[in-house]
Amino acid sequence: MKKTSDWILSHEIPSDVTVHIGGASFSLHKFPLVSKCGYIRKILSNHKDSNILVIEIPDVPGGPEGFELAAKFCYGINYEFSTKNISLVRCVSEFLEMTEDYAIGNLVKRSEAYLNEVALKTLSGAITILQSSINLLPMAEKVKLITRCIDTIAYIVTKESEFCLGDLASSSSNLKAIVDWRAEDLIVLRIDVFQRVLLAMISRGFKQYALGPILMLYAQKCLQGLEALGKEKKKIDSKQEHEMRIVLETIVSLLPRERNTISVSSLSMLLRAAIYLETTMACKLDLEKRMGLQLGQAVLDDILIPSFNFDGDILFDVDTVQRIMMNYLEYELESTNIQENDMEKVGKLMESYLAEIASDRNLSLSKFMDFAEHVPEQAKVSDDGIYRAIDIYLKSHPTLSDMERKKVCSLMDCEKLSREACAHAAQNDRLPVQTVVQVLFSEQQRLRGTMGGDGLITVEPTTNKPSSHELSWLIKENQDLKFELLNMKIKLKEVERWTSDREKTGVSSPGRATRYSADKPLFPRKSFLNSVSKKLGKVMPLLRVDGVVPMSTRGRNKPSKDRRHSMS
Image (cartoon, rainbow, N blue to C red):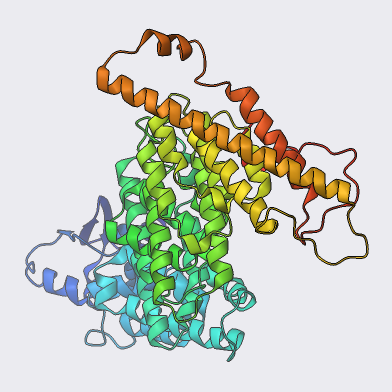
């Protein structure tokens, strides 16, 4: 502005009009202005008798900077058009009515020629003009600058993407190629403009599944740092939170509908952000459904979604993961091509999740049981994973009553436990007595199934036949195990009968009170259960999967604890 004023003063022609634009003043001359600016000509036509006039022009696009470019053109001062200033020149020339009606080759025509012949011929030029046009609304919309930029970007991007993708189906390598090509140019745009660009690209034939990497790149840029904030109470200001929420909801609405176009880990990241930013329920449910459809590809970290209540509640958002699992099951039931491997993988994943959340001391029994009961039976190869989760839960919640411990143990089927898990459960002091009995009984039934109906071991034909001494020893051990199980059942019934009598009478007889005092266990749990588990330890190593009894039993060791089934 100073250069412009100095140039005018250097001609030693006194100014006859002063123009005020947004706090800046320009001392100018009527003739150069009225010869090219229809807007100023109309104003000055009402002040013919005044020698010196002061004009106030409000709402000039670009303020003083924009008016200065127009004034220079009126005075014939040379300056270059560029992609950085052309949007400003075009908008201010339209506002000041610098059209061909007032001068041939006026600023409107000159700026339009540069836009059409130079600036809008490249992707980078169109994006630069589009960014600067956003600050010149509503005039930028009136002269269709934003629309033309969006159309140019959509056209160029669609053509280049067709070259990158060809006719190949979507794959991770193809999607990476999309990100590599100029996708980073688009993520600098404001979210509403970014949305308009993507919709224009789709209308021109851009493959919708290819939007995934672009959207995730935009999300990572805009939501950067949100993961760190999620570890503690919110420190983000309300305006920034609102802007992030708008960005996230828009991105989710643009996600491709096809499966596998967005990785599960990326969906998990979006879902965590949606929960933290408290987006609409529709947004969160959409992400949960998408994760459910691809749950077979998830790992444990993907579903360990933290709880953002910040009120000392549970550590993980169990309800959200349960809804994700239900979405998966619903999809599998409707699908005609059920993937058994996926079902088993999801079952193991849910059991691992149960074991992870079981250590949370604030996790209620009802929530733990409700989640475990929704894990489908067909997804479980065995109940070892459920047993491990139950064991961790019992260890982390030592104040559970006997009734509550029985409830949580009812989640597992003792007949579906492996021999290693049975051996561990038989020596697990955290389990209720009834559960231990069921474990031992199911293992005895399994041994009976391995043996013939007459109690003898079924031996496959082999060149190395076991000796009669070994067979006799194994049969004797099996009979001893049956006897000890029967003895335990009798004692258990006696305890239950005694408990029932006490509840009916309200008092206990002196004899029974002495026999089953509070200082002593109801029966010698350690010695008795250990003797039974030792019997199992002696019998089980002698049986192989093929039913053959090994020739030698010397140097037998008790089955070691498998740490996969316990926290201890």
